[in-house]
Image (tube, rainbow, N blue to C red; front, top):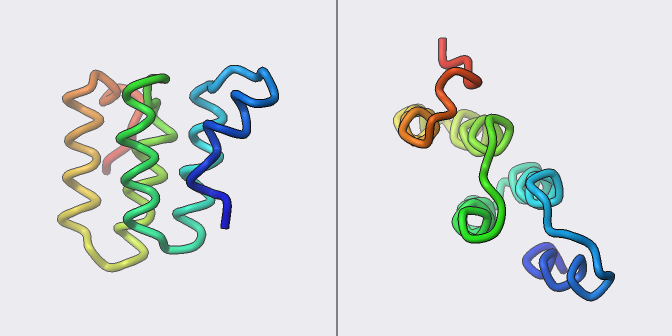
Length: 91
């Protein structure tokens, strides 16, 4: 699958690699249950586009679906540390 090369596709087309584009790629990995791919996308995002509340919530959703609530909470704590706490509902 070509999910990991999203940056190359957008750059080849002359499109900016926006947070929304990264989030689309992140969500595709989450929908597949691909933890390594989703984490890799979030790591690469931080180098080119700032993760937003959707980015963190999407990754937390993956961990919740996997029954790994401690990991989901860790992601929400990362959102807080990144200044996204006011946009993440972690009730």
